[in-house]
Amino acid sequence: MAIGNPSTVSVTLAEYGNAVLRTRLLNLFSFSDIDPAIANIVAFNMVDSIDAVVLNVLVGGTNVIREQAGSMVLSGGANSSIASTDVIQSRDVRAAVTKLRTNKALPRKGTLYWAAIHPEVSYDLRSESGTIAGWRAPHVYSAPGSVWAGEIGSYEGAYFVETPRSFNDTTGSSSTRVFYTLFAGQQALAEACGEEFHVVIGPVVDKLMRARPIGWYGVAGWSIYRQQALYQVRTTSSIHTT
Image (cartoon, rainbow, N blue to C red; front, top):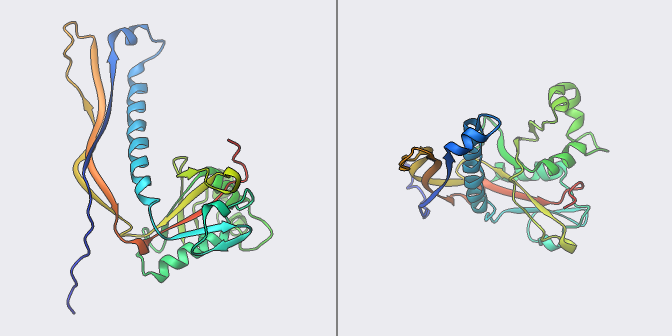
């Protein structure tokens, strides 16, 4: 058997970074130790910033499943048809996982695909009722810890990661907010890294040693590698109010 040549995609590298200036005056006048707070703020800024960049790449995938007017649409359709009652359901998860398996996408963890879901969409999935195939029924006895902690965990062939950074917009019917729940296997995303993201402690150039810069920096780029390994489910949330 001969191993075929790998497919290639173009990835554009770019610089990313941010920095703050920690001053001696702030340290002396603050009510608490500000260094741990600054470290947390810088770290979270790095995560938020890079997640947003990667997310904008992932939502460019072409495989979309929508809830529209009470029905699941596996292909076609438009966000403008998603009404305020079109929340995520177990069937959407099953469909996304089924399509990934049909496309021979390699799972991310064991036999499970990765799924990123907004907490307000997670609420609807965990609140689904009226069917034995809903999320809660199989978890009550087999994994009560997930119920107690309010975690989705693994369900219908995917392991879920809740994140408030999940992409959403107001492109639904009458400006209904539409949330994008992503499902991915291996090879969904290609990454090129020129320099790993890391914290940078800048030089103190102030003559009185009062100002110390701290920030983060990295050089990288991302592109969708295999469309067949990436699906998104677009729905609204029943509890989103703003």
